[in-house]
Image (cartoon, rainbow, N blue to C red; front, side, top):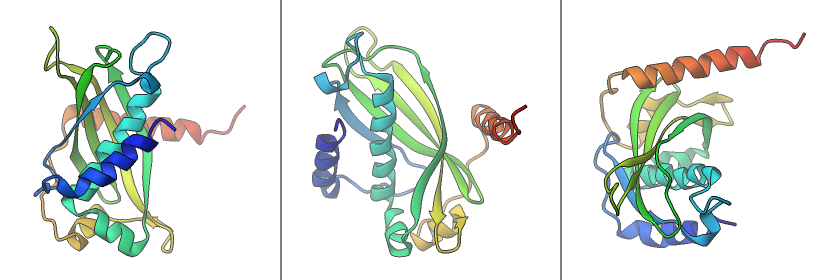
Length: 187
């Protein structure tokens, strides 16, 4: 229920937002913590961070035009893993920015970085939380993930793959380790 009003507002305002020219450019969205967003500590609930991050990723898809091949081909967006680091709380009624950008891709998987940045007070400009999210588009007909380069080509976007930064590499390696661990039979 928490996301419905923001989702509605997102779809109403999206046509009026400027396009993102490159898939590597950053989406910036402004939010404020509402009563429905908080936990017993009177700050943004940790689950709500993940919910808001969905909007940031949707914003990148819509404003770059990457959504067109998704709808045309009936692909299914998939998040396979996420890692988030909380640095500062975001209190009730506090405004903040959500910054989202694609930081890496290979074959059928991409990585998006999402940051929550404080807008007011003595910590103005400080990052409150940072997340890396592994994403992909699943083609149900072909039963496989869509190659990111093919997806971008269908959206008429061109960009070289960004360099693999150490924190992104560590995230992908940790995700692969966890995947291997999950596949071990229980004793």
